[in-house]
Image (tube, helix red, strand yellow):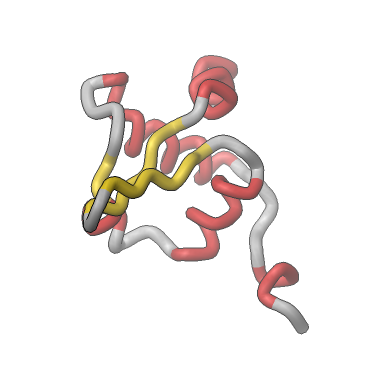
Amino acid sequence: MSRDDLIPPIGPHHVAILRRIHAGGVAPITHADGLADIAFLDIEALCRAGLLARVTMGRFKGYRVTEAGKDRIKQT
């Protein structure tokens, strides 16, 4: 079994995660430490679906919601 087999399909709880990260557009980038309570595989599923993007600037590591992710939030 590979790690790819463990990645869950995108579901309603992933949209809730996107809403939390996007925060209504207030915070364009969320620090990775702020997402410590979210399972790594859920974040990986969002990244692979193109709904979430990793952001690194020097030592800073975070995530931002992509345009596709914003569209997915608006649909629900």
